[in-house]
Image (cartoon, rainbow, N blue to C red; front, top):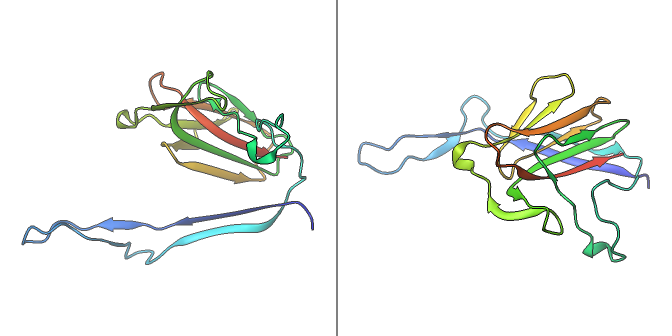
Length: 163
């Protein structure tokens, strides 16, 4: 069997209804426009199967290997001949004293801090809140620069470039 990438995405728009006249809490319903979930994916995207950068392969036991996260402070992730790239805002601070660089402090979501993703020479293509992720299959040969929407609270970012 060939090496491959399997990914899926689904989106369900939900509308919150206001409280009823008796003061009961409002319900949530599916959007009347879409009426369900939309999504897509691929279970046979070709992958070269090369080692994945930033995964600590020094431990002989695969289950003990850890991802070494990067900071959202202007880190550049190259995608030259890449079959896919995964980027996730962990929601926690970057802490280089930890084995995987993920701290224990939640980055100030109340202040609206998000991880921004900007391709070289382009506009911001995504703002990821804590826990949010994006996967781009077969991205163009470019570099994606990570940043934050405001302030200097830099989250730890999990990523995988699948070459």
